[in-house]
Amino acid sequence: MSLLEYRWIGRWIMAVALLHISFTVVLFPEALARIFTAGFFNSGQINDQIGKTVWFVLFGLPLFLTGFLLDQNERQSPPAPFQEIPLALLTAMTLLGIALFPASGFWLLIPAVIGFALKNHRANKTWGQ
Image (cartoon, rainbow, N blue to C red):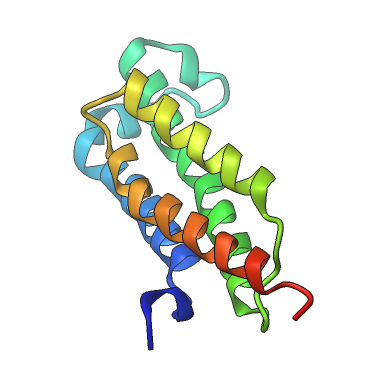
């Protein structure tokens, strides 16, 4: 069985999202504590460190949703063809994230983008056969 036949792309992205959210506690424990001690509401604008903390958590949530939806797509048999728009958006997000934040975990999305592109190409080729 080839890697293209396994259901891994969405799960990979969900794992990256969970790591992203989990690293909030590791990288920003003081800022996270301050969010809750400052009264929570509107605390994302207190300072730059808290803004980064909020962004870290909030970005992980839509990333997890993206992975979940791609996992649902991978469940289909045969796989859905013509997924160029989600593929282009995932690719753009990954490349933009790498360009803007080279020291970030956006690099972890490259295997998922490549796998998604290969699976989409295969699904397009076999569509209607």
